[in-house]
Image (cartoon, rainbow, N blue to C red; front, side, top):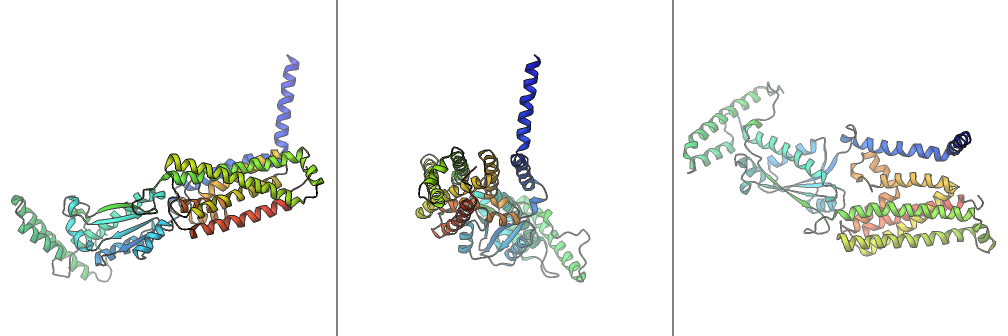
Length: 448
């Protein structure tokens, strides 16, 4: 019994000493959960929720005073970063992911919306606002609808109940009174409605007169902007339109998920490639290779090429399954798509070699590689869409190669963009590959 306990203590003591003696592995083991937890905690904290404004475009086809006020109110909202490009340009920006949504105020909105305030929710008579949005970021749609409804109701209510010139009745109220007078339905309500409009007209005249009296800037006693309490129904309806490769194409969420997950797990394959090199060195295989008249760069270059081909093959198989089973399609340039997966294969190979050169040993390399890979896929948008990042982090993430790979694959698949949208990601990944490969060949030790 004594010998068993002593042996058990010795074994436990040995494992603990070995664990704490590898300082690099210990640091990575502690740092990984801290960094990842801090990343997600920052995204989910209330403070970070208001950091990034949502870039949206407002296309005003009406050009009325009411639509102009709505556009101005949206631009002043702290949730939005509003631009006003032409409709065709705005649509293309949404397709490229530069804008989250485009709000289209239709012609005649300024005249029809105030009248629709009393429609009782009859959708047939409501003016329609189209919201073209990026379907990969559909959670933004609810925010756009909510903020839009708020400002439209404020401005429409103000236009109806705010009154015209001093002593004059709002023309919208005059029109509504005329409609009630000419109506043949519900005659029992005509008198009550006429009295209501007369009362509103009196209030309008009084409010306008008071406003002119307080022209020096004195606000109303209650600080209110409009008589929104008089409204009876939302004076418009919305139509949400997904902006994909073509007008009638529906967004396939599998395209985005396969891009992110294929990038992540092919990078993990690069880890195995790097560790295999270190194990071959430990077994003395590299010493045998060096005996041949082959340079170190040639030997490592051959390993990079083989890993590139394997990674490209794996990516091709993964996306073939995505196309055959999940309906993913290359809606953009096939040449651009193939260029992206080949370039990412090269990036994977040079990344694995660099990890091996820095890690020195198989044991230390595995921990370092897992941490580096998790950070790269996390910042690249494989787990959480990059548009949810704070503004500063969206900029910083452009220094991560996985961000370029995922954005490029999205552009070639569901976004349906041309080969020009693949060129920048390809060039960026080639630059990272050259950097990783050069550093790895420079730092790689032939002897353990």
